[in-house]
Image 1 (cartoon, rainbow, N blue to C red):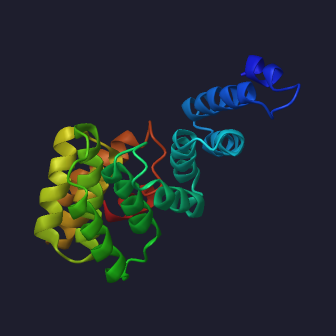
Image 2: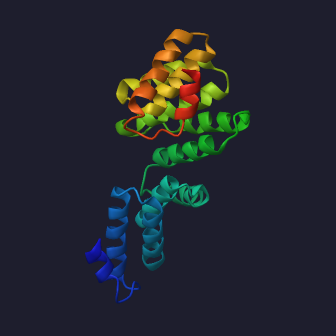
Image 3: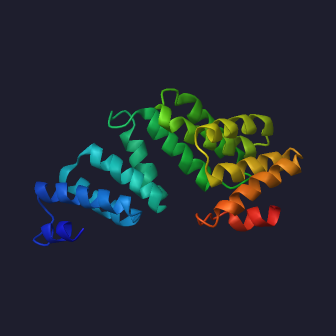
Length: 205
């Protein structure tokens, strides 16, 4: 990081500087300093007008919680070929579901429509798509379908958010005993990961 900072000390307005900015932004991403990564990718994109850099900025902006920038980039990148449209649509789904109010049925229906159109996702992205499909279905009270989707996501990769969501779905179905086991998983792993939904999981447990 210090080497990148020194390389940019003389000015950040050349093609070489753009390469350094992208490299530093990548380092910030690995450090989970997503807003700093977004700033570097923004500056690099201004210098190069490279859609590949804009795609990096889109993902960093999403991780930083700057959903307006992420959505604008996603819309602009559709059809660009930098990422598949299915991957971009999955990001749009994540933004929709993350921002939607629990009662915003139209947003969840739109998310499901986008997921239905994203039929050529790479294999590594499918568990995330299943998780967001489950989130939308849960909010629409389609619990059996939501359970199928979250089970598929969990069969691929176990995460706290997925166990928590399966607990919510099972609880909504009246399967309290199984739901408690999901919340217990979350409580156990909260010693390692700072889950934002921990207070609700603890109360439900």
